[in-house]
Length: 211
Ligand code: GTP
Ligand code: MG
View (tube, rainbow, N blue to C red):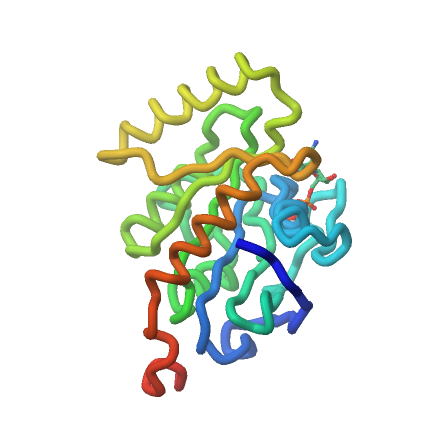
């Protein structure tokens, strides 16, 4: 897919402040500092569109960007905390995130980012389990792969797969990315493009844009 243009649209503090859900939307989520904002910038080829920081917790609001004359939305979300949570502590994911993810009508796919360098973290596994139970379509993006040798990356991805397969019948669709080298850009944009096509005329029907 070619990114012709992209523009910041709006920051929202709550779901009800978000733009009308009248076009396909793709959001990026994951722990603080995992590289959500950097990945968005890499995908659209604009270094300073989404704000990036070395300090966790930079993105605090739901940030909407419109792509290709508003054909679809990209959304940069705040990170979910860095405290370890167990299954029984799902409420710990900020209300803003759970509200947005579970109620946003036009969310076609959620990209869950995990740092390729780390062993599977409980908070990510618990979050994905909640997504499964809530029936939210998602895929995984392994970020910062430039920081690993290819053998370490392979090992890390194998470990992740094994751990996921304890809970899941199959591994969700996954991507690897580097915001510095651009690896993963074509694949992720290609995936979004194919989902946009699959959505067909859904968003053109007048009854789907009114909530
Ligand atoms: P919050 O908004 O705080 O939740 O963080 P975030 O997930 O949006 O992370 P952000 O994009 O701000 O990046 C955090 C740090 O990681 C920054 O210092 C980035 O430069 C760095 N970073 C992000 N992606 C990559 C990557 O692919 N490779 C490398 N080497 N560094 C990266
Ligand atoms: Mg951010």
